[in-house]
Length: 337
Image 1 (tube, helix red, strand yellow):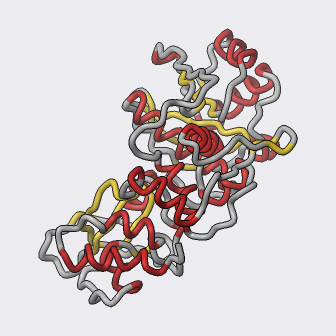
Image 2 (cartoon, helix red, strand yellow):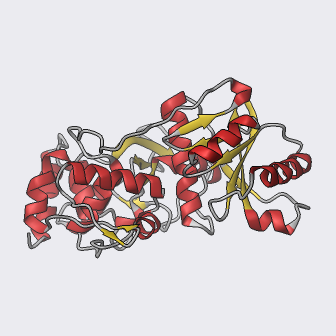
Image 3 (cartoon, rainbow, N blue to C red):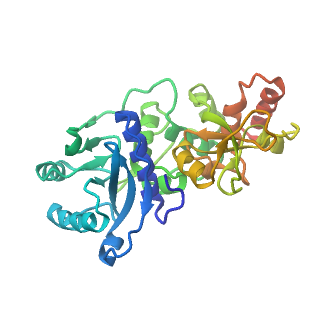
């Protein structure tokens, strides 16, 4: 998945699309942006195109720049122009939400579309709609979702997020608006946030902060690390933040480890590994480095190129090495709460 894209919301929507397809249907889309030569400017300005894989073959995913397609008939004309230029028969429209009226028209015209977390309709695969309707927030689970955890950690780290709207939070933390909205639902269900609107605009308002917030959610927080890999290859400092022992050594008196450890979002791993030609290494290879893939993007919460103190604490507090576990506890001492 692309990391550097002009529109952070489209990048986040692409990531949400990959995650949804993988978790709901076991489909690995492998999205990468493309800019076909010779495509009319009005189509380039109106749509972002991404190549990927679906049904064991190539597919083109079409993201409207302004989140809307206008009329379905107009979109079909544009889609056919794109198809002729790319010589690719499978075209999939990607939208954050699909109102009932638009959904009916798309299905009538047999237009393949995905709305991450809500609908996946690809007539070529005979996949029907999968919809999620609920007037009430989902019952809280034992642990916070990754996006809800990001919001809470941001508050504990002193970020000014109260009264921020969903778009602002999505841009700042590189998450789809849909995911932010669900995370706020989750926090409201847990009584950690209260419903708050300014006009028609939904905004975040936490009920507590500091020590009170920490006590309320400490047991619900989880390590962001999904997987650790030993690899050989060069990663730019601004691409993957320092994590693990490498970051602990910067924050505490822990000795600097021989093997550097970095973290990056799990959704970007395949693309980054390919772009930077990262290869698996033997444990005794002195050139190796450890790369952690995280459930959320560590960059927005990072401090001076290092994983934030709370995420770092969560990822190291149960380390079997007593030195590391003790250093992790020291991370919390820097907070006034």
